[in-house]
Image (cartoon, rainbow over all chains, first blue to last red):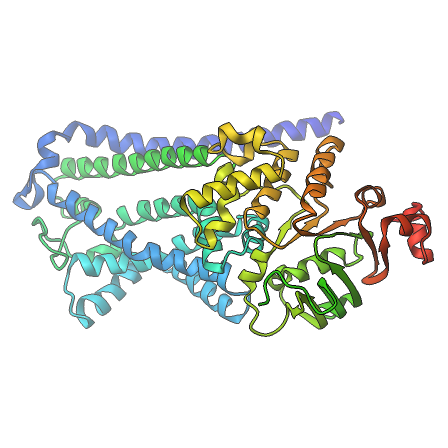
Length: 282
Length: 258
């Protein structure tokens, strides 16, 4: 290698290093900023009390409950649909117009801004189906929104299962269903779970799609037909209406910590899962 | 299906003018030959000769490929495997297959061998017995008996291929197809597989595909030579190797091509 090539090489590595470093710095900056501003206002009481005076005082217990229930519901609705679609696309059909239409539909869904989902959910679930501002309306809207993520990651991980596993399974007299459930799905599981976690992260932080469909009630919900206010909606309202910037930061800090926690737990579980199964990918 | 039976001439497997197409490309041309039960049939030929296609027609694994077409008949126990209404899963549990690349499923050693029987609803102590018996038949029991719950991925290549053989045997098939089962193995592992096969031939009809004339000669039995989708000749190894009838066979076994 001549000197010029070497110099170009060094410049390129410096550039890429710089880019990577910048990304990490931005991420760390945002997280630190929120934590520094929010953590001092965090307390046990804040986590376990209902808000008072529109959120100027008190805690965020109803929002924590609302966020959890809404997100879990959305995942419960979207996971069977999304994974089922992915299984259909990879295992039960060959490439053709139908698969292309489904894939095109999912990709288009992924590109739609969340506020449009909110509007759709409001018109369809809240008004048309008369579900009102409720956990159910919000969860259905969120499910539609995260569906593309789940379909795509599940499809990718199903496709990454070696063809030889399927051949072996069929050659051993397994039916298609047995092949899917006993050979393919277990192998693809880590990837599918990763997709669900991604979707979880997306729906937990979603604001626009939820504010129109789940409402912004400050009360603790008692049924799926009750309205809730999620954490992101809460701090949006706190900040937007100038109610309490301090409480807004504290709420944001809870959200950030929760998302980080979900990611850590998910990756820990994934690592354990793949370690137990031995070397999965070949 | 007429289980364990044979067709009227006493053949376990018989091809009658069998043709196979991948889309427009014809991979097998008018193949006719027969394999008696409880014998070892070697199919030898270079890459692209159609030998693997023939093997994958017997258990209809080629069904996974889009746009395939067959003509003629391919009979097992006198029944055309491509006849309408054939229970393909059932067929595949009667016609086991060992692949070229030793590939354990990402499961434990036990679960790998139990895979086939479990798909047919076998469980409990019968399952255990079958797994143990199959591992013994495949001459790998002594090496894995104390770690059946370990991941199969940790086994060596030769062990993985004997595990694949055990996985097939656990289904109690009537026919065992082996597609270049030793192509990725060292000579010693190859020998162990070949020894296991020699033991098995009294209870099973075995078809082994190889591109290696030396292996074909070593294993014995009948050897069929496939070339460019045609069956060039078929006969006892002793005859075929000392006195080939066709020039192409001679060229192949003497290493002029292939």
